[in-house]
Length: 210
Image (cartoon, rainbow, N blue to C red):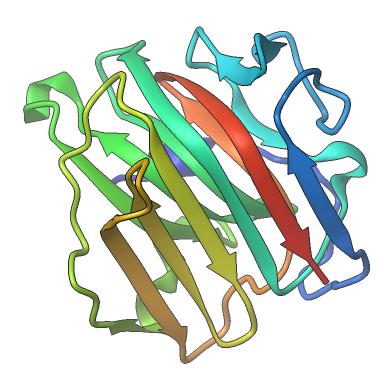
């Protein structure tokens, strides 16, 4: 995938490698009190939604920063909002650097292909993880996801590696991407939700970090 995700400047003011805050959050989105919301994100009917697909990153309140992060939520892609790359899912943000675990739809001109990916933006380079990881085998690393279908996404980041898992409502694992770190990568940050070019909704979030 191109540098699409790297166009947003995060400005969270987090120093790489800082692991200062303990995080424990369970959120059914009855309101937006746990998040640094903008007008593009709405907590309604017990869900956090980005209806216009222009939400960027939605970080937890106070930009709490941790390592050993686990973030999961029920995620429903609703519809595409542009003709270019459409992206939505979970993230760990550290200043202008981040990891993102997202549903992806390629540009209309490229066939609107659906897949998932775990990618890193670091020092202005999208896909910076390529030379700093070992890809670990999993049963299924691809997913032709569907609109208006709810999936359980889980992203786990620690000092050893990162794993993104997609399950269905019954808990059956549909796809997983797993990397072992072998070089310099982002290993801490602020848990976040992600939307760009994709209307999406989130529910039943569980987030921890230490």
